[in-house]
Image (cartoon, rainbow, N blue to C red; front, side, top):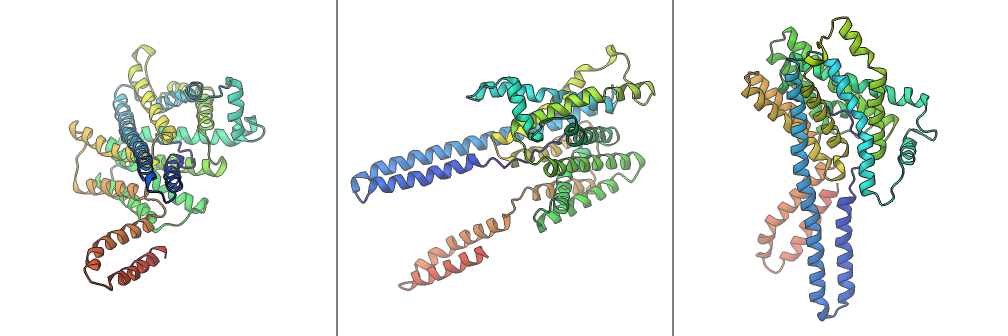
Amino acid sequence: TNLINVNKCSLCSGEDRPRDNVVSCTVDGQAANGGATGAEPDTGRRRLRCCVKITAAQVQKVLWGVAMVMCVCSSWAGSTQLAKLTFKKFDAPFTLTWFATTWNCLFFPLYYLGHLCKSPERQPPKQRFRECCRFFGEDGLTVKVFFTKVAPFGLLWILTNYLYLQALRKINTTDVSALFCCNKAFVFLLSWIVLRDRFMGIRIVAAIFAIAGIVMMTYADGFHSNSVMGITSVVTSASMSALYKVLFKMVLGSAKFGEAALFLTIVGGANFVLMSFVPLILYLTGVEYFGPPGDIPWLCLCGVAGLNFAFNILVNFGVAVTYPTSISLGIVLSVPVNAMVDLYTCEIHFNGVRLIAVFIICLGFLMLLLPEDWDQCFIRLHAKIRSKREEPAEVETGPGSSLNWSRRARTSMSNFTH
């Protein structure tokens, strides 16, 4: 599930570099030109090569974004559908949560392999481990740090996964995936209250949409016990996920790729060591029954854990190759994918209330993806469109047209800045 969203600086260096190239190419072209007409072809070719390079980089990032959307959507929807199918043979949600969380131990080893392949300065495993441990403080990873800064997040991780799987046992995958998208609205509300983030009216509207969608989804199922319990479980899971993200930002701040990989590995290792007795107790008390090892559907369990692991890799480290919005789009697109699967398997009845609830939840999720200066961008775009429409009419007005055009242009820019 979408549990870790390490709050990194949006890795905009890939966008800033092309802009620097544009400026440098323009300056070089002007310097080389120096008023001489013979240098104009060289300047034109230089600018053309720079533009081609920028376009290629942007196209590559867009293609990576499309691939990321497809991978995130398929892994998220696939893990949800496979978990729903697994419960028909293996009705033990906490054991499945424990098994899938243990796979987090692979994060740091995979990161170190990437470090050996990509980094020019190859460090030994111990040295790299110690450098990443500085993320927890000057003393590194101590027992006190573990129980105060790592264990609470591990508990939130397990609760989020467990409640999500519990919801899958009660209601269909479409409702679960749609309701879990409310976690982004919960993140905004908690960030606004706890972290004092900037107030944005449109995000308040998105949060209202999310709450309205939850109520409508409950009404669509008729308020029977399984529906209420399932919706309560997935909404609580979304709340735990939002609390995880906000507390991570407040307590630990932002993390680099190696630090995030080490943190997830420690969470997986602690889960394996400290939580292994819980599935055993649940089995002995009869709360969860999974039969002898030969009857356990290991292929389904490994499939759920593998898809969940792939999803967390894409969510946490996908920002290195594409835009963060692409990852969020992949999550919200999993809702129609799950709906198509549920409709094909006849596990859902799409009445009007359910369709409206799913639509407004997804709409609220998309509204939360708008940047903070979305209104300024909209005003700028409106001003450009308006100036293009008025320009031909201004040219035809006669000798005084240039003066009138410049005054109107200044007015539009003044409106934009305010």
